[in-house]
Amino acid sequence: MKTGRLFVISGPSGAGKGTICQRLASGTGGGEANSPVLSVSATTRAPRPGEKDGVSYHFVTDEEFRGMIDRRDFLEYAEVFGCFYGTPRRTIVRTLEEGRDVLLEIDVQGALQVKRNYPESILVFVLPPSIRDLKKRIEGRGSESAAQIAKRVGEATREIAEIGAYDYAVVNDDIAKTVAEIKEIMGGRHARMADGEAREIIARFNADAMGLG
Amino acid sequence: MKTGRLFVISGPSGAGKGTICQRLASGTGGGEANSPVLSVSATTRAPRPGEKDGVSYHFVTDEEFRGMIDRRDFLEYAEVFGCFYGTPRRTIVRTLEEGRDVLLEIDVQGALQVKRNYPESILVFVLPPSIRDLKKRIEGRGSESAAQIAKRVGEATREIAEIGAYDYAVVNDDIAKTVAEIKEIMGGRHARMADGEAREIIARFNADAMGLG
Image (tube, rainbow over all chains, first blue to last red; front, top):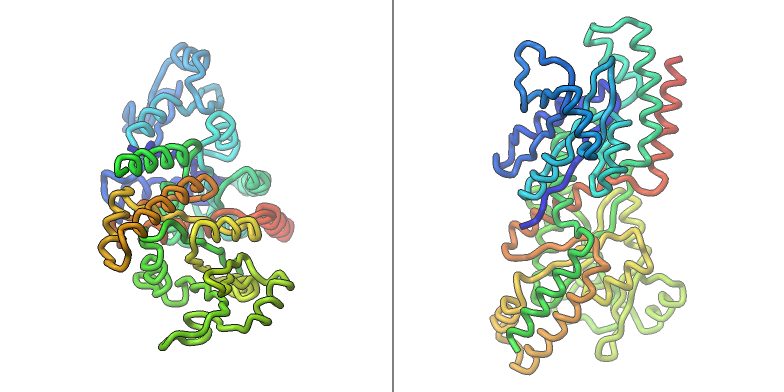
């Protein structure tokens, strides 16, 4: 059986990566069994009402989190407002070994860390149609001040400057189209030969030809 | 507008690459305008009844063919039983520049030549499910002697040994499934960033952000 692939869906805040991942993981349009599995982060922050352990996050203590860092059990981690957030390597690898793809929704800095720690990961950058459009989307949320919005736009420009490290770029001007595009990227990657796979294929067919002798 | 990509569909005789290319180019299941264009070879052999110039082949004289070789107007060419066959670079490049993908059905040696002369090409290897199965398919055609079949099986094994130079491998155990798989490969490649594309994206978004200033 083929192992799965880790797809990292990333891009600036407001580009729509969250919605995209939810749709991809819900498997609409594909078979349930083939739909990718969303990676669940570990965090030291307290659960909020309605958040379930193992679904929203793996809620762990500071000590447990530190232990995971020491065992190099994170593909990336970061501290935000005194709480830790990390992407656990072990659960992802286990899912990949079961032959299922994993989707990881993460910001640009996190994606770059994941690529360093797991070079086989496939990085997809979700771009807004334009900065103007991104600004409108963030304004539309109505949750941020003008100064915060200006800050986000600046961040987005700096994040886009990292796009050269990515494998794929998709412009999210239509959510259904973007989801279909990423599905094609994911589907196509399965025929892509991994390291050593060519050698396996050759050996298999050689043995086969011998058998016919 | 994005330029198209050259997809080289290749593999041993009997693996089904011809049928696959016909189905991909006929655009069933996709929009006509988006379906890839089949590359038409140039040849010095005489047209057979029913063969149309520019459709089956570009029929050219020995002198014209030699002129094309001198102008390096072939991505690959070969001599078979005293006749020349070649893949014309110029018509392919023109089609790609129009934003359409090109499909090139070719044997393994030809595919390797194309990759050397046009490194941006994307090589897809069509594998039979097994050598046993390939043998059965060739036998099923009923057109070849036992000795010829044995020779073909030997050739197939040597051709499969070149698979390491390919980008993708698909096992053709079901024609509809294989066509769908290659469509996914082709679709996914469009989001793949080409050389220099990252720089263009960054420049565009920077200009955009300046404009908002």
